[in-house]
Image (cartoon, rainbow, N blue to C red; front, side, top):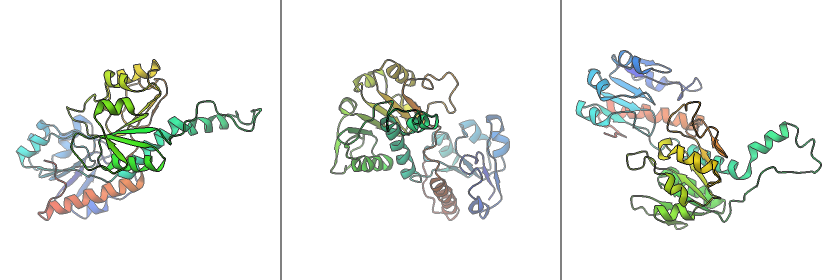
Length: 316
C-alpha cells in the first residue's frame, strides 16, 4: 500500500529511520505540509500519517483512496474522527510512548521554578560568582519541595508517573480524576475546588475536550494560593492564558511552568511570553530520542496490525 507522511520532521529530523515504514510499501515522507498542500500530497495515499497536520471532513471526503489514517501522537484532535468513521477509514494513535519523558519534563519545570538552577547557572557564566564577596549566593528564593502538596488533574499514565516522582521527593499528592480510579495509597482523591485551594503545585495531565477547555480559568486561579505554581505539559487550551498572565503579573500566583500553549508556535504578542515568572518550553516534553523511537515503532506496528486484519489502537 502507498504510504504518505505529511509532517515527519519533528518526529524524525534525521536521527531515526523510516525503514519500518518503507518495508510496508512505497513511502513518501514530507517534512511539513501546508494547509493548501494537504489534498495534493495525500491523494495517492492509502495509508496516511499525520502528526499535527489537520485532516478535516472535506479532506476526508476527497481522499477516495484512503483506507487508514495514523496519528503520530496520542492526541487525535487534528482529525475529524466522525468523518473518518463515516468513510470507513480507520484512525489510530500512539498511546503511552512518552510517559516517562513527559513526566520528566514536568518535574524539570517544577525544579527550575523552585531551585532556579538555570537562572543561577546563567549568572555564574555572566561572572556574578567570580565577582561575589561570598563563597555562595542566590538571587531568588530557593524552595524545598518536601512537605508541599502537589495536585494532579488527570490521573492517567503520565499523571501517575509524576505522582511517583513527587512522592519520591517527599511531596504530598492529591488528585482529581473525573472517572473513578483506584489511586495509590499515598494519593488522596479530591474534588477540583479542593485541589486548587490546597495545592502548592497544580499539574495538568488531562486531554483537551470541550469539557476541559479553559479548565484553568480566572475563578480557579483565584482559588490557588499566591505562593502556588501551575504546570502544564498536556494541552495549552486547558488554560485561559489571558487569565493566567493576569494572575502572574499581579502577583496572585507565584509562577507557571508550561510546555504547551493554545497556539503553537505562539504569536510574538502572546501574553504569557513576557508574563512574570513564567517558564515556557517549546512543546518538547515528548521529544526525547527514546520516546520518538518508541513512537515510530508503535506507529509501524499499528500499520502492520491493520494490514493483518487485527487493528490496534483504533480511536474511531
